[in-house]
Length: 116
Image (cartoon, rainbow, N blue to C red; front, side, top):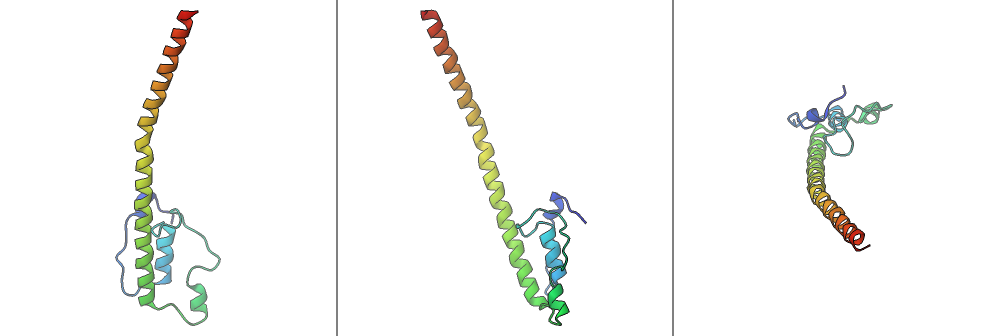
């Protein structure tokens, strides 16, 4: 399942018995902030090695890891929004400056043309 950007902001409630599959789903949805929201086919999905060795990850530990990863994702999204808004706020000022410089150049050229 490939999720859109809007789906990446919805969150399932954390339970005390989280699994590696739930953490992998959070990562694939882009909720952890370290990749875009796209399903990532894996040869050995997260947690498979542990389960094959007979030592599945502790559900309580997985819940803590999921919570920490989701908080990190929230911080990454907030920082990205702040950076994008500051860049887009500078664009009108750059356009005004370019207009004024071109107006100044035309005035200067006009004065030079009249003097000749």
